[in-house]
Image (cartoon, rainbow, N blue to C red; front, side, top):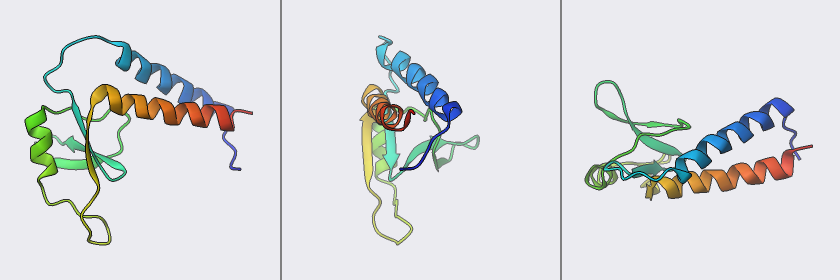
Length: 109
């Protein structure tokens, strides 16, 4: 099993806290969708171009914008159609919290 340092575990715990705060915040948002394309999320760069990123806090979109992004021609590195998912922001963060819980539980010495 790979080892993870205490510093890394502490960083995961802090990120989990931040994600949990997002999930527990009750506000109505117009931009409440996250678009995941493979291992990446869709982002809007400074020129308003849709790009791929691995940001810890990805861009959020309206449902219409999320659907527009899905309808773009996204392909994987082997030129096959990329796996694309639209998530409600809280669901996306809950999934990340589950992954962090697994890492913290199984790699925390």
